[in-house]
Image (cartoon, rainbow, N blue to C red; front, top):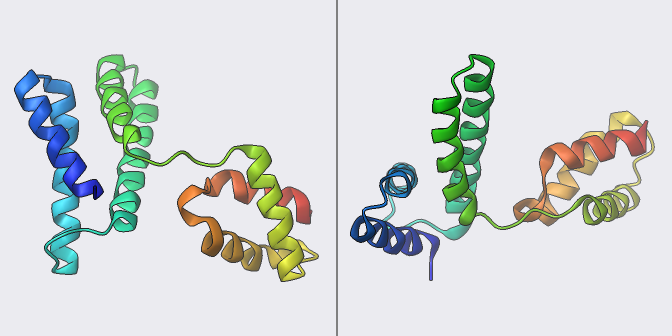
Length: 148
């Protein structure tokens, strides 16, 4: 089942259960999906585009949580954390550090990278091969360590 349909089904379930925090999160996800569809001029949204939108929403929530905690607004941080938990339910799991390290070594070998200036080529190879399952920050750090 496409991710858009899954979100719509979950939205109906949350409405029936009167689960307001989950309903709010699902409505926000659906709104992002609708905007994505309007940008493309499409009637539906491919799963890879939907996943990219979900990752963007998750990053926004993480940034908001950090800022709310700095401002000592734990109530708002908790609301964002609840929404982030719902968003993460629909995201595929990212590879762990050991797997990412192996991919980094393969990418370095395949690109022939030797120094830090080659980092862009390595990251490009990694992202093209494992974009959906790769944590970019972790990969960036591991590539920098290997090429240092």
